[in-house]
Image (cartoon, rainbow over all chains, first blue to last red):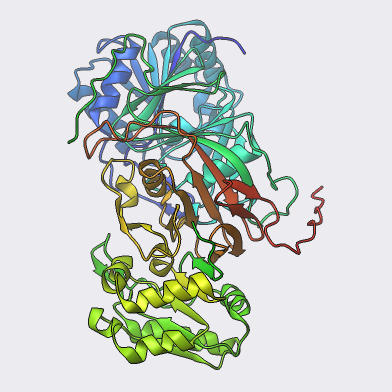
Length: 297
Length: 297
């Protein structure tokens, strides 16, 4: 695999619920934004508050509300060059003026919503090709929250009810935007109890490392390989490379899966992981100092 | 540890919600019983439908409803000698007539509700001592569902909100009934998204194997050591013996935990696990035949 020069920031979830396909609902409220700490880190990684950021609201069914929420949040941390790209369909994705904006910006942020909208609308478009090209060859930053995070990888979960995730076939997978291989990203990980769902996805695709992102939590991915946890919550890493027994190829859909030997790590802020080496890092950032131990008597 | 002659059957949960301390609620409805398959297995392990079974409703705040539910369910599978022990406090637990009933029965079933009620009411009583003694020295079967399952072990989770379970101190542990050491049992595992909570309990008590029981799912434990998954759902085993890095002793309460190298297994019906050897079993029952592979073309 090539070593991209750009950075990815996958964020576990804001409160934008857009469409919830699992529940069959369209939510139109609860748009509280995620904590500004992660957004600040995104802006810092992208080059500071003066960089040009395009917010791509395509995943959401309420793009104006979501977009304005981002504009306000970026505004609160001093960003002055943030615009919205309300791409609703493949025709929009081919508009030359939109492609030119991707050519000119420093970073993009994919909003939450439904990750299938991202793969179905952007797959094979010049718009996505340009993002992939810039991410590969330039210091270009791509962030995504919730559906926007899940769509980053080549192998993408698009549906899977947490209550039935232990049954084969209940976790639906397709191809994502392809910014990164060999990982599967899940979001709202703790809140929606998605351990079983990501485990099934990993068991079915054991070349992929599962990345379960909590809310107000993200992973900064550098070089397409080295990850650092950011935000206040938990990132759960699921590694299926050492699975000994798995029944997943041998049972019909609807039967419970059986798995021996998943390896799991809990990453808090500052911890990290190297995908190619499948290695947990206590201190992911290069300039990290050893944390002071806190005595708890 | 001694090798008990009795059997334990820990069941992940019926729909009796009794008291939900986490939500601060007392539920008075939704008493649908768990599937009869697990109950049938319990009766079979205890010696058949003619055995004397005592249902101990102590954990529940709605003992009559819960008890009648069990009576009906046992009745549906042909059991004729089932009675209820509505022990509400420590004085009840010392009543000679109740102790005599424990002496005469073949099996007990602890209902769901609140596991702290079980440990606080039975701890140090002659009633519990007799159950422990009979379980150790006779072919005596002890089953428990939900709170009744969680209370079986010496190390018992009594509270822990799933949403905050990645924060140190949010998972509360105390001493259970002590029928089995070296495990921590959690219930309603998938439905309530309790992977983080059981992981924290295991990380804090790495001598213990975590057993996460789904609904309509249980573990039959023989010899205090060998386990077999029963029911339609999933049992998740969490093994912390090989943890490499953990920050849990070094951070104050309220901070996110960080863990490297939990080992996790998914057991479906028929799979098992040997606690002392920390070994996953594809075929737990002794007379098991190799399952036919099902071709899925």
